[in-house]
Structures are given as C-alpha cells and as structure tokens.
Length: 634
Image (cartoon, rainbow, N blue to C red; front, side):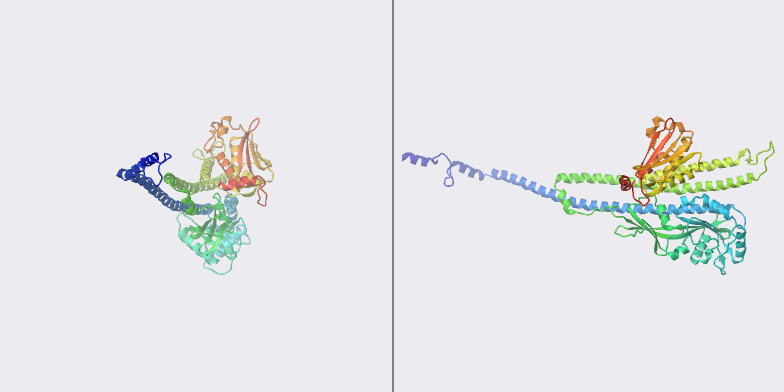
C-alpha cells in the first residue's frame, strides 16, 4: 500500500506514460510557459505573416494576370481588326489603280490613232483603208479585249454636210449617208469605223443627234480632255457599254478652232473590269462597278456579285470625266475576323510565368508591327514605282514607236516612187551619208526592246507582290497559234504540226506569255527549226525544242533564276527575266517547267499544266494542283 501511495505521490502513471487530460505534469507545464513568452508568439506571427503575404501576392499576381489578359485581348482584337481594315483598303487601292491604268491603256490606243490623223493632210484627213489598216495594226482583239469598235468623227456645219457625204462616197463608201435626217446647227458624223464586236452604230451616224453624246463632245472639244458616255444602244438595254471620246487638234495645244475631230472607242464595262483586274487575286474579294450618274451597276467580278456585309468598302474612280464607284466586299472565308472570347483567354492565363510570357509576346508583336509597317512602306514605294513605269515609261515609248513607224512608212513609200539612181549617183535614201530607213529601223528596234524590258520588269514586280491568276479552261493549241503569230516568225522557223487540240486549266494571259517567252528564247539563243508539240497525260504537256547549242552544263542550275544569263550569250540583247517569268507563271497556274538537253544538240523546255475540259472541270489529280495554287495565292 505504501508502494502504491508512493507511485501516486511521484506523479507518474502506472505504465510510464503521460497522464492524459486529468493530469498536468512538468512537460505540459513547460509548454504552457513557452506559450506565455513573447518570442514564441513573434515566431508564429512571422510565419503567419509570410503565409498571408504569399497569399496576397498570389491574389495580386492572378488579378494582374487577369487584367493583363483582358487588356491584351482587347488590344489583340483591335490589332486584328485594324489589319483586316488595312488589308481591305490596300485591296481597294490596288483595284482602283488597275482600273485607272486600264483606262490609260485605252486612251493611249486612241492617241495612237489620233497621231495618224494629225500626220495626214487634206479635207478628209485619212482614207477608210488607212484607218482600218492602222487600227488593225494595234492588235486590239488581243491587247484591248473589252473594245467593241474604233471610230473617227469629224465636226461639220450644216452647210458642209452634203459635201462631206459626197467626198466620203467617192473615197470608197458608196452608200454613205448621214443619219438621222433633219437640220441641226452642228454635226459630228461617224466617218470611219473598225468593228471588233457587235455594235449598233455604223458609219454615217451623227453623234450630235444624241443630246448626252453631244454634251460630251462639247466638253471634250473645249477642254482637250477625254470624255466617257453610255452608248445609246447600251442605255436602251441597260447594258454596260460606253463610248470613249478623245479630241484631236491640228496642233498639240487644244484649241476649238483647230479641232480635227474625235477618235472614239466603244468599250464593254464588264470586259474592261475583268481585263483591268487580271493579275489581282480574284478569289478573295468581289468587285462591283456602279455608274454614279445613272445610279446603276455596270460590271461585276465575279459575275452577278452583289456587295453586302459589314466589311464592304467603296472608292470613287473618275475616268474621262465620269465617276464610277467601286464596291469591294471580302468573299466568304477570304478574311477571318478575330472575335473576343474572354473565357478562353482567362483560362489560358494565371500566374507570373504567363504574365512574363505575355510581356515577351507583346514586345515581339510590337517589333513585328514595326517590321510590317516598314514592309508596307517599302511595298507602297514599289507599287508607286511600278505605277510610274507603267504610265510614264510606256507612254513615251508608244509615241516613239508609232511616230517612227509612221515616218518610216512614209519614207519607204517615197523611196519606192523615186527612180533608180544612175551609176555613181548617190542613193535617194541617203542624207549626209546616213541610211535613214536603217537608222529608223534601229530606233524602232531599240524602243521595242526597251518596251519588252519594261514589260518584264512590271511582270516580275507583280509576281513578287501579288502573284495571282484568273484561271479557266483554255484551248492550248489556240494560245500557241496566237503566240506563234505574234512572234513574227514564218513557218520555216517554227514547226507546229505536232500541236494537237487540248484543254488546260490556266490563265490565258499567263499561258500566252509563257509560250511567247519560250518561243522567243528558242529563236534568240537556239537554231531553227523550233518545234512545238503537245500531249495530254495526267496533265497537258507543251514542249518547245530547238537545234541550237543548248544550255551550258554549269549554267543549268541557275537557268530559271532572275537576272542571270550564260556567259556564252553576251552578244545578244536580253534582261535575264524571261525564263524566271516562265517558271513563276507556271507555278502560279499550278504547273511547272523543266529543261532537258537534246541529243546530240539543242534545248527542250517542257511545260506541264493541269488538264481541263471544255465544260470548266479540272481533270483528275490536276484538281488538287489547281485548287492548291488558288488557295496559296499563287
């Protein structure tokens, strides 16, 4: 019993453990005492402070990341919208520029005809045969596909109408009569006409009989500027045919008293729009032209296009005194508009790492935006240079070629009527020891070479900037025959007996240039005969071969590079762009071109294009190639 009382007195339990909740021993007392010390509480408070600081920092970081995500989202949405708007504005500007350049080309053709009239003498100025011959020499069916007719109108008073009609009947138009009958103060009858399509007008029609046309003739006569007015037959049919008038004077300075007459062209607006926009991406936007004066649509690309949607853009184009409004709208799936999605954005962000990543991305995007601005500036300058070359370089070249050709024709006609010179007498063609026809021929040849160089440079610039195409099924044999005819070579130089009818899926303008470049390359660097053949396998294959020395082996790897020419052909004129343009145009149309040496000598260029059928379908595996070329913007 004393032992038990002793164990109790010691304050220890029976089994050597601590006494639970009913006994406070010395260890528990020490813990309680430590809790009463300020240092213990300071340590606990420091730990709790760190925990709260970490929690607050985590909340602040999350809040900052969330706010940054929202701000970034709004900035990104605005940036993408601005990019889409800028893309649309540049697309509109490019199309406006092409429409203006197209009208300038047609005015250049009228100026060329006017130069013929200015160089002639006499009351009628020009005969019908001369007018038709010169108009045919402009090749309007190939170069001006929207032109339906070319015409020449002269001003005449009431007193001179009968004499004018009689003179024109004597000059080869026995049934010439001025229509409609009736007395008018002034007349402007159509004297000569070269037709390229179906038109209602014919020689003898008095343009002054139509009030709208008469008003345009007065304005052009007094201002010296061209004028544009709907054709009378087109107004009746609500069609898009227009008459383009250019006044021609005896002197270069416009003066009412020195007016000779007006050169005119009837132009189909829809064909003009298609021709002007060839080479610009046809699949990313639809275009409609509306005549603001008549408030009616006159052309659309693609056919039947109606401008709708929130992203439509408009631009007014003044052409020869008439205002056309161009409507442009992105076609479906052509421009993706970035839209806001806060839930997805917030789910992607949360913490310091992502905030830092956003900061890095922001810096990179800012640098990219600066680079893009610099590239846009450079592209705009390049576009300005191309536009300058297209207008300011072509116009004087056209004048040089046309006037030199007129002088050469007149000189040759004069020389053919000069009697043969006696033995020892000087040749009538020589002036001061110079062969004038030969010198004029060299001037014309040099101007043509410079004109071809300008064409090559402009084509290269367009391929580098916006390499697009307007592909459709085309007859390959027809394109080849046109290119052979345009080359000026006779049948002894070019053999086309192996050309068979075939349909290819390609831009006809591109294909004509490819074939023309290959023919010109063979005639310049090879040897006749040049043989052209076609075949249809998985695609349409066109081969152009010659019997010349071929391409040096060390140069084959650089054959299709720009501005490269073999050292063996330095004595021949060239820009080094012909085969580069061939390769790029082939790629744009979903095809390719290769070179193979012939044995024992000669060169063989093989062009492969997607095959097509006359109903517009692309054959077999070529569907993927043609679709891929269109989607990649080639």
